[in-house]
Amino acid sequence: MEQEIENMDEYLNAYVGKKYKTFYRNVWLNKQPNILFPSWNICAFLVGLCWCFYRKMYFIGAIYFFIICAVEIILKITGANAELYFLVSVIASFLIWLCNGILGNSLYYNKSVKDINRLNEKTSISAEVLKKKGGTSVLSVILIIVILFAESFFVQILFAGGFDTPLFRAIL
View 1 (cartoon, one colour):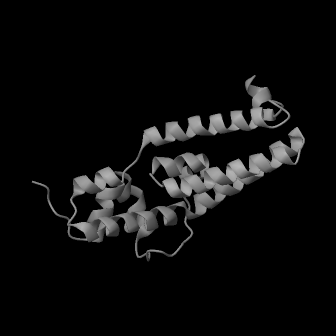
View 2: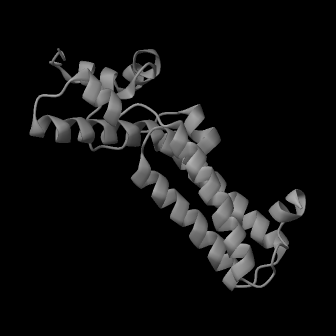
């Protein structure tokens, strides 16, 4: 029989998984939902977009992905040379990583609370349901990496310049 959970701390523990008690609980202590708060998450900073997908924050990850795509397409359309293309791409990626490192814990907390409240409105929820809805997804990380490489490849093919970028010169 599935045991019902009675308080938000237990909900969050079941939703987040093993990192809740060792990391997130201390960061989220006394925080209010729907309010952004700065705190540092080194993993969110170092792997940026992949961290969002690993933590099943697909909407935020999609926003970051579309920003990366937009920057890349704009640079290609404007005919930026390889050096400018590389510089702007690195700066845009760094800013995304920095924002994710500073606001990642807050965004994850807000998403977790929102998901828990949404599930709780429908019926009483068990730890098993929360583990399935929350937790992590390695498959999502692999998928977004493949999508990023495919997007980069197609942008290079579709726009003049082909594979004349620092990334493709390093690979090819």
